[in-house]
Length: 321
Ligand SMILES: O=C(O)CCC(=O)C(=O)O
Ligand SMILES: [Fe+2]
Image: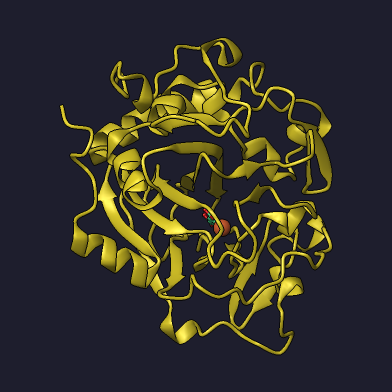
């Protein structure tokens, strides 16, 4: 019954702070995850209640179509408030936590890996900070991401890679601009590995154009279906290409969390990235734990979501599955 049952121990927290990530840990049993994904992938094809509509969201080329499906899918709405996830997130961020974004990261057989990158304000693709921490010149920022493997994620299907301990200083300047060029997707070799950033080239944001990530220090996060990993978005992270040796896709689902003191999408009512723009009219942050005493952000509720919705804060039990 205790909401603290998955909280990090002092040693786990210390390890998280030094490496910048924690896990993998189990959220679902392997067979349960596989069965759930078989069911949900069909439901998700119906975008009629997805909060982003229009050309940008519908286009197969844009990643915006993969954003925030927890707003219209009940399984994902429950997933982002699972105690296995939220208790660990709250151990780091404190009790008052929002989920402001979710993203599917699919890799189909033959797809390139994701570029090495770090995200602090998430201005990287949009040109505008998407999250703003309180205070000036803070040495922290970014978002806590929990990336759950919905399928097998290994070195052949394209698992995540991290460079431990790199989360405290940025090698990229998100106020620089990247050029969107979907024709380059799956075609660019970077030090022997095909990688890209969904139509962008993250190297464009390097503070030092001659710098290279210390790939010799990279670790592969091999994960089975239903396992998750929590990491700072400011940690150097990437993924490997899908080698195409199996016809099963690799799918990660990332939930992004911040304390309620953070301003999300400040001073804007659109997301502009991946060659398109979508309205934030139906967007709201989900209060997954504690209370929001700041009132900075629009909070999603039952009524705005249009499906039964529970939060850890409401005390009605986090998940119904
Ligand atoms: O799944 C991937 O390839 C990249 C994931 C990622 O960059 C993230 O979750 O922030
Ligand atoms: Fe990322």
